[in-house]
Image (tube, rainbow, N blue to C red):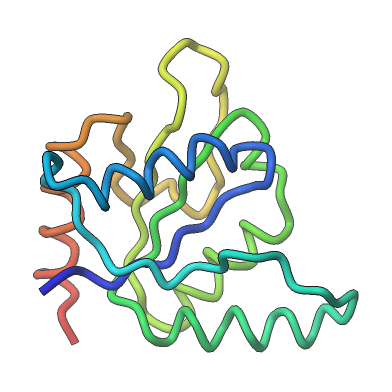
Length: 136
């Protein structure tokens, strides 16, 4: 059964996030997860509504994967999603989207959680380990 994952990311990295999602759909890739993240931005300026809807998605998952790039650490929404995940006892992991040196920082919430580069075998191993360790 696929691991249920919430993907946390910033809009600037959407192209790389789409590639990540595509890897999970490929029959040639061992990366497999049920994507519970937000696919379309909310058509609302009501922050409480957005928080409530995102929180409902996070409640359904096994873990939250933060796909981070150069600006992700500064995103209030990513930081809120990671904090909400922890509040709901969901484990976190980080995947650095770029290996060319442009990413200097990761979101602070990831400090005590596994962070890996874009290496599918490491990502799969980390996801499986976290899912097993934090099975509820």
